[in-house]
Length: 169
Picture 1: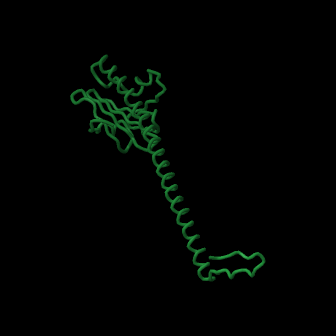
Picture 2: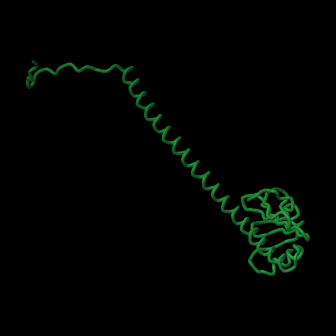
Picture 3: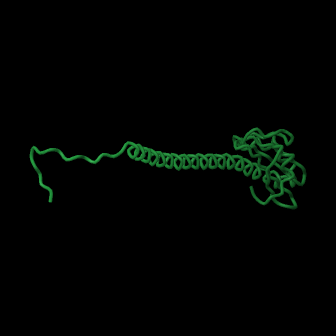
């Protein structure tokens, strides 16, 4: 049993050698560095994922705007077809008369945006194209015999849209 002697000689302390102390400090720094790196890396990945999702959602919103312009144009083109039994009446000039805020250009003119629709007409078919701000050109085509077809591609013209073949945007 140890006793305490007031005023007695101090007991020798056990000292840690310098190499051991350096090793402990390095281990501590390495551990902290690993934690910081891990947090930064996973935080960076989370930020990158969030940015990627935001960009994708923005592109989808842009695409919807172009697709909506095409759908509205098709509705007007069908109205023209009902009146005249031909799609030839549903040209850019006719569609512009509806005053919807969408601009219509002839079928060989390239669409320059989601509300600029390039329109190509014939007696039996109608095609239109609109360029999304995402960079995708969407096509829509209506035929007397085959119904509605969709597509995307280049060039972004109503004339090119006449080759649309898919079932949806």
